[in-house]
Amino acid sequence: MSFALLPTSAPALIRAPVEKTPEQKRSRATLGLIFLTLFIDMIGFGIVIPALPLFAKGSRIGASADQLAWIVGIYSLLQFVFSPLIGKLSDRIGRRPVLAVSILGTAIGFAVLGAATTVTMLMIGRIIDGISGGNISTAMACIADSTTREQRSRSMGMIGAAFGLGFVIGPALGGWLLHFGVSVPFYFAAALALMNALLVLARLPETLTPEIRAHAREKATIAEVFRGRSGTITITLLSQIAGVTGFSVMTALFAIFCSQRYHLTAPQIGNVFAFVGIVGALMQGGVVRRLLRRPIEKPLAILGTAILAASMVALAMTPSGSSGWPITMLLLVCAGMSIGNSLSTPTLNGIASRSVDPHCQGTLMGLMQSAGALGRFLGPMLGFKLLRFDANDTSAYGRTAFFASAALLALDCVLLCFLHVPPPAAAEGEVSA
Image (cartoon, rainbow, N blue to C red):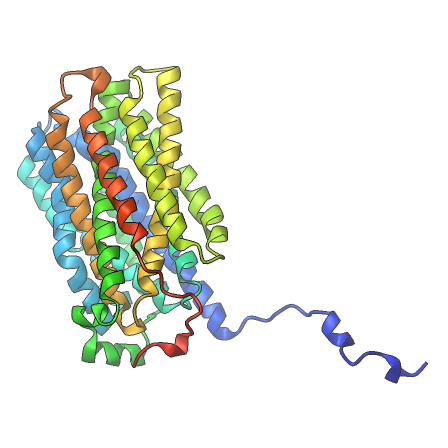
């Protein structure tokens, strides 16, 4: 039999395993390290969430409602001021040193919180942490540096997955550590942050290339971010403020809300946060990443925000009680909140990231983090003010605040409807010089 009778394309029918290029291997390794960095960071952040309001309001410090609002909110107010500056700095001197120093500042802030015996000391700890709290925007810029535009929204889901997994372990661990003393969760979080800073210095490669760094020194201004795409960036930032403000009303009040309406202890509240984190991690680490293989970011963002708004209304209306149906309802509503947040957060970050050139990524992510920080400041301030309307009614505790949260999230849905999504087919080489 003649071999000439064989089709010339026969070898193509047998597909050999595709060998990844060195650049692709480095990109995957870098993304893995960024995920690990964010995961450790979010564990520390999660540890503090159930502990801080209960610690500040407890007998050791005895903060009032107004003081508690500032203790929770001052961190985010300072992030609002400093995140764009830190993001711009990372565009100039590199992601790695900025990330390491900001995480080290977080460690110092947690240590001061653990040593606090007065409201003033709590405020100092939160101020230190807030000033150095630009690490999320820098991590986002690292991801943007290491991915193509088409992959970016899916890769931004890593941040959501890290948040989710951090919320699985962090709040539950924080509630459990409270058994050993009111300061223990904060010292443990400080130790985690210190370890994380050392990990970044030892293992994380610099993702900012010399070419992009040189370009950033010349023209990575805030005006450059808005140039040619002011409508998209403006609506994205307004959406971030409205959505995060609404969501932060809930997160600021949740531990006290669960304590008052459902009579849950700190460890039990931690377990509820862990449940929310498990749902979020499964959604963002699996479902959302698969959904984002298609260009449906805008519909997903709108759907997620609508689910969040409906969940806030449901949370306001859940019955009070320490077991049975009230707790089941609470968990169902929490699952809805986690699903909604998982659909909306990474999609919005991905849309924003694909709207600008590589040399503006740090500045843009700083603006996004700043907008989110403003929302996380306004949310607690609004929530604790509105809490007074229901403070003496256990069955309706927090209802007014959660209705306000739902209204803000509904406004976010309207804004998202007007958002222009950049086409996903843009090639990496098409970015402006």
